[in-house]
Length: 342
Image 1 (cartoon, helix red, strand yellow):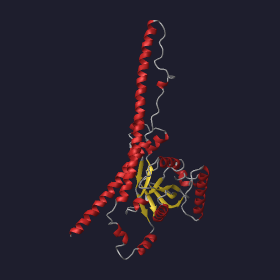
Image 2 (spheres, rainbow, N blue to C red):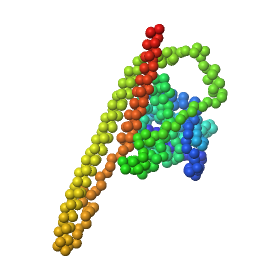
Image 3 (cartoon, helix red, strand yellow):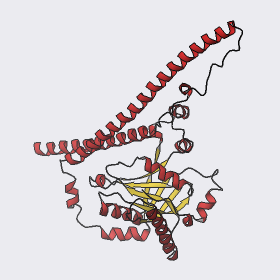
Image 4 (cartoon, rainbow, N blue to C red):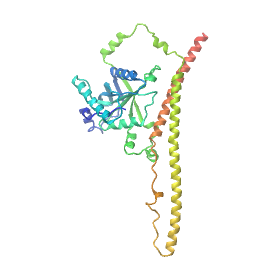
């Protein structure tokens, strides 16, 4: 997972954003330079199926978050020395970019994923770490496996404000979630991405366009077989269903223990009231009806709903992928049927 931004990488614009936080407008769009998009795709494709991350650089201007550049993080092991090396690497890269007059303000990070499997606790923790230094940041997620199906699987994500408040206060319990009316669809917010290029780059790309309107890539889109992609999505979805079943078992166990505890409390209270009636009849002081030292009055910790919400989000993503691929497959099959009939 990506490192949080180094302390030395906080720009003047980011420092001033804390002063104008109340007057800031919500984030509406992420505007990415074409060069930054190509760098992200190249980095993720080269190391696929391994997962990689990198830093996003740019500017936060009003309702638009501009991503003008990026650089990859080296693949490393998870230990303290590697974390220190990663922070030093970020500072050195930003210093070098600043020397050549390139934007070096951190606006988030990017990461690759496999078939959309990015909704994890680690992603949320990374978001919270970034939020300590940057008020508004995004995570750009790129999926090489989906992009190989002819779709640019690139999306910008951020955590919703309501979810971050609950997460900071450890309020991901059933009661708090019902009070805030927060469901599993309210964890992440997808921000539209707009890819922009300078006029010079656009003119150069126009010159590079081939004269032939049809290429081998266009013919590849007519492949009728989608079995490998569908199978992997179904395998991952089955795994998520098993995870969701485990989460439900946790809550069933919790509610069984809660019901058992409440029954024990009622039995203890009934016994204590009978004892107090006897003490009153004997002219003695009644005993308190609650005993905090008694284990049956100790509240049971409710399991967090976060894992269940994330797994449900992931299942929804897999269902959307399968639905999209199946729809495209049917369109191709109907097209081939019409061609054969003609």
